[in-house]
Structures are given as structure tokens and as C-alpha cells.
Amino acid sequence: MIPHRGLAQPFVLILAAIVVGCRTEVPKNVAAMVNGRPITYEQLEKQYQIYFGGQTAELSPEEEAIRKLEVLRSLIDNEIMLQRAERAGLLATDADVEAKLAELRAPYTEEEFRKQLQARHMTEADLREQLRRDLSVQRLFNREITAHISVTDQEIRQYYEANRSMFHFPEPQLHLAQILVTPHPDPEVRNLRRDKAQNREEALAKIKAIYARLKQGEDFALVAQAYSEDPNTAPNGGDLGFIPESALEQASVELRRAVLALQPGQISDIIETPEGFRIVKLISREPAGQRDLSDPRVQQTIRETLRNRKDQLLRAAFYEMARNEARVVNYYAMRLYQAKGPVRPGEGNK
Image 1 (cartoon, helix red, strand yellow):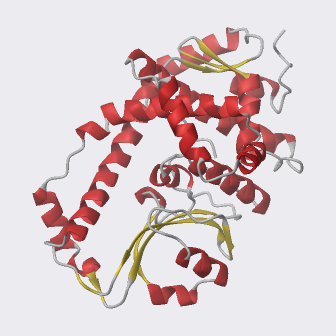
Image 2: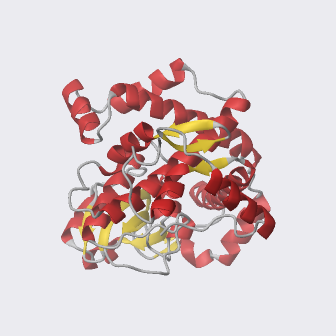
């Protein structure tokens, strides 16, 4: 589901934008413009293939168009942030890109790495460009958001006193987070993107796209907040809290095996469960017993929890503020609406 933007703008401005949009001739091969800089249909198609790959054979034209709108929105958001990073002099250097590429390549042989790229419909040049963009945007976030987040000792103490029972473990605990995608329609989806798979095929394609983003280094909590379909955990970045090890006995064999194989900080492969498709992250393992506030692990857990909350809130607000300030024209959406249905890239450009 595509969220409606600009509802808070004055009606006169909305009406003016509609009038101008209806009179604007669509530039050839331009899917959208962000502050005068084009996003082409070639870029849209390439990113669409990276996200969904071969999971599009059975899609209707309408379903494919909806997916492309979502991919284009992601490209627009990324371009907005990249331009802000550029203006601030925060673009990643060649050395930054090569260092990150070496880090991603390290766990694989050359043949395995090549197959990973092929599975994502990417060339090494595509990956370098994606890394440059992601690293530049992360620099922007570090300066505009992360550098301004602080957690005081008083906040940590207040959180501990309000949640003391969370730190009493009668048995070993696992601190887990998850991203869940279900195959069932739900009009009450509560992730930031208002994004919901409608059937098993869409759910599988979506979770594969999410997995690819995580493997490219995107932050698990932010991806969960944007795309996870679990209404209880998505707002908190997928955080499931501490779960007793014995609770895994009630989980499916595949889920239990995947979780127990994880080391802190690692994510699982895609796991199919009766509820849908999951990706699970193990944040930490904790032995049994009461944890006092003097325990450095307790302080660190609380500090990270509070920092993540503030980070997620400020990033969401920063994205909205940046969108409000950007000049965006989505020509692909305009053409879809004018044609009252799906169109091919070459239609309406002449």
C-alpha cells in the first residue's frame, strides 16, 4: 500500500501542483526528478531487478506497476538523502567504497561472490555505486542524527526501575529481533512504508528483497521498522525482547535450529513458518539470574535500547523533513494515473 503524502499541505498548493503536473510534458526516459536531477527508467528497472529478480513471472501488469512505484519511492528517498550528503561534503571516497567492498567479499571465494552478485542481478560496478550511495547517506545520518543522540545515566536508571523484571532471568535468555512478512492481506499494516504483501508469492519476493538489503549492510532495526509486517515489533525495529531458551521448544524445527545456530549480531537465512517468512537476528545471549543495574551488560543493553529508540524516531522525522523540503516530480506515477493503468517505459514520452 502506497502512503499518501502531502495531506498536511495547504489545499491551494496541492491544487497548484495538480494543475502544473497535468500540463507538464513528461521528459523522455525520466521516471522521476528530484531537485532537478533525473531518475531514469533504466535505473528503476535495474533496482527493480535487484529487489525482485526472477520473482515477477506470474505478476499481473497492475501488481508489477505497484511494485515499481514502491521501488521508485525508495530511489527517490535515497536520492534526496544523497543530495543532502553531497551538499554537506559527505560523499564517500573511493577508499571508503573499496574498504566496504573488501569487507563484503571476505567471507566468500571469488566464485561464490560472483554468484552472489548474479543472484541479486548486480554487477560489481552496480555494487560499488550502491555502496557509495549507502556510505554517503550513512555519513549524513551520523552527522545529523547519531552525533546528537545522548543517553544519560538518569534515563538508564529510570528505564531499569520501570523494567526491573526484564532483567531477572530464571533461565538462559535470548535477545532476539525479527522481520516478518506474511502472505495475508491486512489493511492495518503498521510499518513506516505502509508496505504489505498480499499473497505468498508477494511475501516471498518481499522477504528476499529485504534479505538482500540486509546482506548489503542496511541496518536491521531500520529495515524492520520500514517493512516488517508484525504490528507488535515493527515500530521497535523488530525487537522481540528477551525470550527464554525453553520457549524455542514450541517453535518450528526450522526456526529453533536457525536461532540456536546464530552468534550475537548475526542474522538468519529466510525461514518459512506457519505465520509467514521470517528473518531473525540474535542480539545477545544471557545466562540465568537477576541482573543488577551495576552490571555493565545491563547498562549497555538499556543504553542501546534507548539509543535505538531515539535513532529510529529522529530518522523517521528527518526523512519526512527532507521529503517536505525536496522538489520531487514522480513522472511514472503521473503516467500511470493519466493512462488509468499500467504503461510501458516508452509510452507517453514522445
